[in-house]
Image: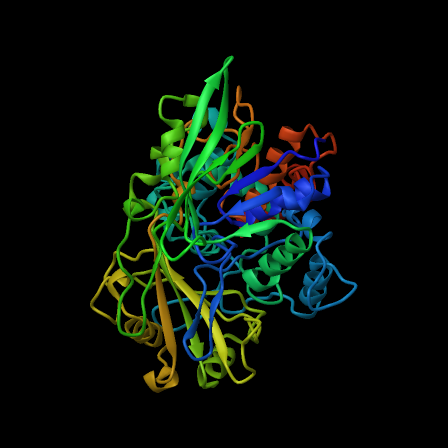
Length: 527
């Protein structure tokens, strides 16, 4: 390839970082020719993890991975060296960790009596089974922009399966039937082990420290320019000879002087990769004494560039299909930092799981549908040995709590701990010294919103000259959103297509075509 050609990534999420790695590893582009422009102070996008023992740790989400479905992700991280284990790749150290810490949840669902719910049976009636089978076998073109509730009866949403499936993957009843169907096929292996989460693989630490940091170190060693505090505010796109080309980028760069400085980057004949949309756009943090601010996309700029580019250009998708209804796409999470082992000790006795082996504990009768997970400790690279950290979230942040007379979205960290102790019947003294940092994410499941064909653009839209989309809002046949894999696969597809790389991209594993997997799923559904 042309050794002088440059590449610009707008947004510093895992998709952009992976895209830069593919440009170098498979495309032969010098790292010094690559710039990643990130509006925030840290790279990594939604795979964040920050803080310390004194201020409290915080991460907006926690990702559960599998070795059966993350084909592109693991293929990439087999070539990224561990920063703590010389001679091993990130993939190697992750697999070694999971061999030593096997998931087998023994308290997946807990009811309002603080009793562990039996989950050997999925709780289906024959009517539920028939409806689910019909939806799983439906054609996507037939389902269109319909919702899950258009195909499943009310009783289905009270089954043990539903509570476990949706809290594992964060679906809501009003979300896309097409995406729900894709999940049933993509994660068919998880159907037969959803009650124990036995197929789940975890990173050694949180995903920022375990995935993002090693990838950043590798990119830096290759000479990639990682530019934080640089917001791309506008894109000059022009159509020439029937093809859309990006000519320049307007940026607000806080790295030049004390004030924001407007700069113009000429990118004609260069490559531009845009993160179109963001599931963590306008997210906000609270504290023990304050609730997170209620922000919307007007407060940030993550969606703006896509909206401008797509206006009047159907091939570039319809962002309004995903970001127009916060009430259908938001939920709240929280991260708790503890300096007293009492909470962890009581949870481990109650669940029967050591931290890092149990996965999500969901309070099925919680008005917020609250879940928590105790990861293996330490969970942060700088976490002292006498400090513990756990994470939780609620799918219904607009509802009044069972023990706190406020909506979850309006709660402080102290109030979230009060609600949690209520469900567990733990003495509040257990968390007396805890620091709980709540987080509100108005667009966190926006990629699940009902969509029609064409609402999501291809990673490299037709009739474009020098740019591609990398995000959770592109169309990739068979694959499922809200996964690290989707972003990495989108990046690999975009890079390979723009550079004309003929090396095959790892295929989406067809576990749903396996007779064994089908049989196991059938047996589980009939219990």
